[in-house]
Amino acid sequence: MPLPQIDTVSFGDPLADASPKGKRKLRLSSVICWPLLLVSAALVAFGLLICWSAVQFDDDYSFSRQLVGVAIGIAAMAGLWAFDYRRFGAMTYPLLIICVILILSPHLPVIGRTVMGATSWIYIGMQVQPGEFAKVTVVLFAASLLAKYNGRLDDVREYCKCVGLLLVPFLCIMTQPDLGTGLVYLFISAVVLVMGGARLRLLLITLALFIAAIACVFAVDEVLKYQTADGTWEYRLLKNYQRNRLFVFMNQDSLSTTDEGYNLKQAMIAIGSGGLMGKGIGSSTQSSLGFLPEAPTDFIFCVLAEEMGFVGVILLIALYAALIAISIHIARTCGNLFGMLIVCAIVGMWLFQILENIGMCCGLMPITGIPLPFVSYGSSFMMVNFAMLGLISSVYSHERHP
Image (cartoon, rainbow, N blue to C red):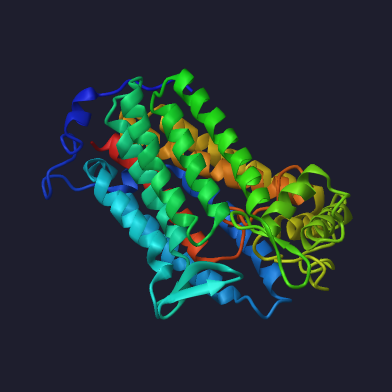
């Protein structure tokens, strides 16, 4: 994607082109991106239909809670839409501090909650996942950090500084640990680095070092592993289920007796049994009979494929493609580097989550806990996706009413 023309003056002072308070009133009715609004509404409605079907057989989930998440998300979207996104441009380090506080808040006593081995939740009248909300601050922080270089980052020292700062959210989330969300943070950072003008040679070196770091983690884990009283091996850096997920992806038949192998096989059975037209809404057997694990969250794509078949899958992918295409057009026509980076970061985040979630259900990607945007159950997740829509709408609106 070619970089748009940049008004370098606006990045000397990120607030220079923001309208003075009270002097100009933004009329949202005249700057609505109707294609974005209509496609988003269709995607949310479609997602709620699938989510309702997935949760009706499981008492652990509440569809009304999902609707609350949508309602709060719409309010958050409206607030961010009306707010001038350029005012975030001067808040690079405050955004990082807010991000760190959000991610580490589940470690606080009293409000912190541990669910399924991960300390990722807090309880403040309702249970929420701060790491999800931190995605918004990661997007804004990364975009504001790279926008200061005006589309050209070729100094090695400055590049290392940026990479180090961008790794902070990932290192914080791994204290929970939440590898799936951490990978989303990394992908957002990678997209912003590429679109922010980092030199190709530096990016390739970073990629090589990242692959080497992964290899080192596995090698060190082999050295530090220990045997428990029941004779099984435990690893210190990676959990057993995380290693098994990768091994199942690499050899899907060798570990069919593990939970991870079972999950993948049940997911593929659900997808295949849907056929062309599906079994009908609410008629899935894999989820209703309890064969498909985490059906409303991680494997909701399988519920869609079983109930609506190939036609439903194509419809979902078409809605995602339209959402991504519209967002990319907004990024391409944005005359402000900061705004362009915000939209590109959000598009990258959505693409990564879509490809990973659908890919893991089909056996094309390793199994992770990454949900499907606007479809998977989770009020915190839904709020964040609406907030992202609000940021994109803010970029669109304030480009037309500078």
